[in-house]
Image 1 (cartoon, rainbow, N blue to C red):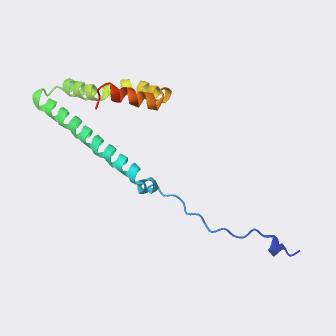
Image 2: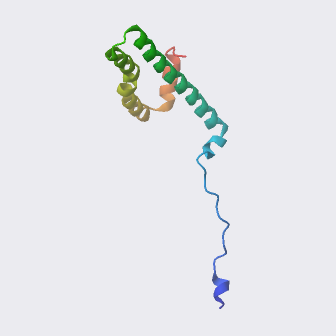
Image 3: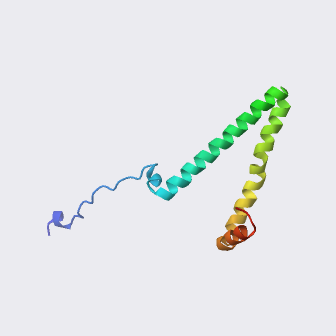
Amino acid sequence: MDPASLAVPARPPEETPSALAPLRVPVFRMLWLTWLAANTCMWMNDVAAAWLMTSIAPSPLWVALVQSASTLPVFLLGLPSGALADILDRKRAISWSRSSGWP
C-alpha cells in the first residue's frame, strides 16, 4: 500500500473565535449594551455624589463615607444573592418576584 493513500485528508483550518463573537447574538448584544448603560449611569452618580460632597464638606472622611455607602451594599449582598440565585428554582423565584408587586 502506498503511504500517501493512508494519510488523513487535510481539514480546512477552523476559524478561531474572536472576543467579540458573542456580540453577534442580538439578545446578548442588547443585554450587554443595557448593562453598559446602567453601569455608566451608576459610575456617573458615584462621581457626582463624591464631587458634591467635596463642595459641601471638604473633609476626606465624608467623601469616603459617601463612596462607602454607595458600594457597601454591592459587597455585602453580592455574594449571598448570587448563592441564593444558584440554590433557588428560577421559575419559582421569578413567579414569586412578579407576584410580590415588584415591577
